[in-house]
Length: 495
Image (tube, rainbow, N blue to C red):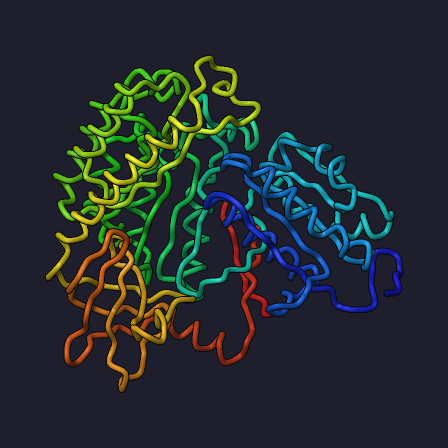
């Protein structure tokens, strides 16, 4: 392929592979938008991309092994096609820096969490100079939400309200990789949400490492509760969610805003991590089990139908059987609808990695399996309570009919439970983004089964209209953002 400076004679295709948390997913949408604004096109299904971007995680277990395994498999492809480019970004790139190119010298670009906007220029520079480009910034260059974005969903969107974290949890490497908390101004956030609603989005999720500390940077107490209430005033916005709050900073004004704002969903993800007060102290989690349970009691008093989910780490250094039993006790009292369970693993660069009394793998595994039994039984019990209830289901974007055997539609209830709906074969199906009302007839640990009325009740939405237009045209909107007078103006350009 001929080269003319940084330009090539053909349109280059791209693919972004995402590992990790919701923040990584949000960043990947920005990376896709940046590349399309720079003239790249998505690789066709099953085809090799000209540019492959790995957006990595440094928190999940074996994250580095997963990355280097993928890079190793690409070595022969790179030899066969030198114009094929590989870029690595995200938290692992921020942490490992030069290590990635040292272990995989066929990588073309390494960029960090603070400069994702540099990716197109770095790819151009790597092609022009015929050498790897490594650019890791210690401070945030451009707030991710100011960058172009390409969303997979027509009806739902992530909206970042902050980046970084001011906590010092001993098991977590995020603060050192994403820096101290940086907050967006409320006007910018609301402008982005309104622009998304104008494009057909009816569900947004407010995103931050600790969403309920939002406002700390500009010194506005209660800013997060005020932001939730402001979302309730946006016409056409059907559903508002947020993730993740921190129990230590969770205040009653947020509970009141959740209960009193019509489009804030009856769902709360509240990370517990451990039920043992001693282990919580070792983790530097600045709350104790009594406070945590008290929050859940107040949430359920204000929002009786709230579905609560959590994160739990098993096998933190020095965890005893007594500590583990405390976790089981708090879990049983909490009645979680969903529990995300993790086995503790050393993350280099975290204080916990150097703690004494690291537990044997077999002990951690055995406790993990016992916890899974408890949380699965609890989730099933909580789901059984939904039988007979009429639920509003937002039909999913890539799900549609569950499979040829069941002929079910799939979506999320207001409390975020996954619902499979028996749908009459002779009726036109609702589109992704439409709302369907159905009655729960059965429950499993991780989903509900529901049926519609003889005459199904369906609300056609602008999100469904947007999906239909996109499906007809095969064009995907790329939303471009720019700061103007403290807000963000968003315009749609079809690529």
